[in-house]
Length: 238
Ligand code: ADP
Ligand code: MG
Image (tube, rainbow, N blue to C red; front, top):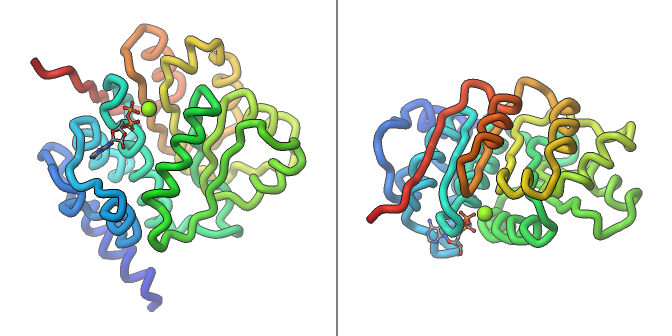
């Protein structure tokens, strides 16, 4: 057997044994692939924040998640680690594997920040192809790049443009959808774009929705885009 197969089997077993109810404090205690552990170490991330401790075990196990925690609480790693790990265990890696994860965030600046964090924790041996689709390049150039990506970080308007205009943009292999800063996505008027994007995606996928606030519109969006989600809210401690 290939070494990767053995790694994946051990990780699957570790994830199966994860107790989503218990509280993990250190990344080293989680069943994460060696490249992710190395990436976290190289960036000096060792202790999980509250939202990460609550969301990551459930997300590794495949649950849909609605996570609310204030700005600065560490939501980026709460979704990037499950994205890397769930795609890794599925061996959704390389040009033939297709697009496995789509991360939607409201602004180009936020997309670039997420991409930088992804690069930081992903560069220690992960072989995923990841890219940005935020409209900085021509549509054709972006489309060619998209066809080789396993993970895309994007803004709603631009990715919808590709979904609706590019016949060759295949999302059949998409396993994970992340809606980051969902409250801001809605505040910026992207509700109809988001609804349209979701109609293009496979129904059988995992969706992680993160927001700084909890509102009626967020729960409406959750009802449309999530399947039996786990609700996680982190409140400020006194
Ligand atoms: P949010 O999206 O909730 O506003 P971010 O994901 O942008 O928060 O993280 C806020 C800051 O916290 C960033 O500077 C990030 O590097 C840092 N951070 C995130 N997780 C950890 C962690 N586990 N340990 C130390 N610092 C962290
Ligand atoms: Mg954020």
